[in-house]
Length: 267
Ligand SMILES: [Zn+2]
Image 1 (cartoon, protein in one colour):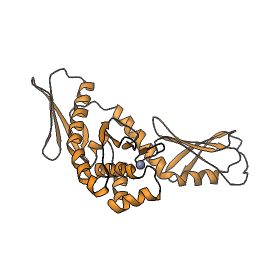
Image 2 (spheres, protein in one colour):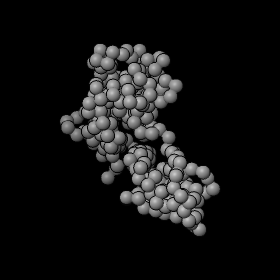
Image 3 (cartoon, rainbow, N blue to C red):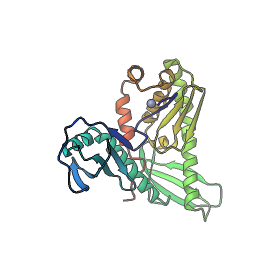
Image 4 (cartoon, rainbow, N blue to C red):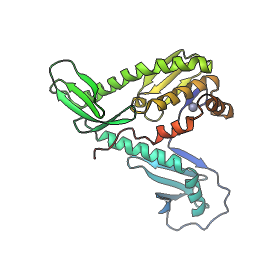
């Protein structure tokens, strides 16, 4: 977001700090205790520090707040409330990551393609590996016997990449004349914490491979967002004005992007 690099969507770090202007409150004698804010359990750690820190902890996404002794619980609650959508996004992301690490790329698992959950059906054959959509709800994968989990995962990633490669240049070509910018280069990267980023100096945008799992309108939002950075690198009033003008429903698309699960559980 600085130095000519923009990023889309969620805060990329998992840590944030606050200044508190609250008066000194009675310090708790216990150093670690719990508070509840909305449906979120907050683990409060009292420390000799100057600022308040919020951190969503892996692997289960519990919220830890490190707070100076002088800040009251009400102020901690307020700080959490102010950042509650950020906390939820971080929690969702970590829980997704957990679920994903439990995946095996076997028949019966659900995998998303362009926003639609499909059931993976893995079968073996002796020819070249093949992946394709079958009907409304199946994702077919045919592999040679003995193809391992990581190899199946890589095959699916490669297939996702090919799909993005087909969509991205078409979307860029549609938006370039509208926005009056030129994308000199674009790349797909395996990124976990960002949907996209850009290098203003090189006129280059990077898009997350995960976008292949999202609805096309979300992919389009990320592309337009990154192209807008080629006009205005910062997330300032001018930047959001560019998005408002070109993609008036960008907020709905962004929310959908951050709400939609990357992968579903194995229920
Ligand atoms: Zn941005």
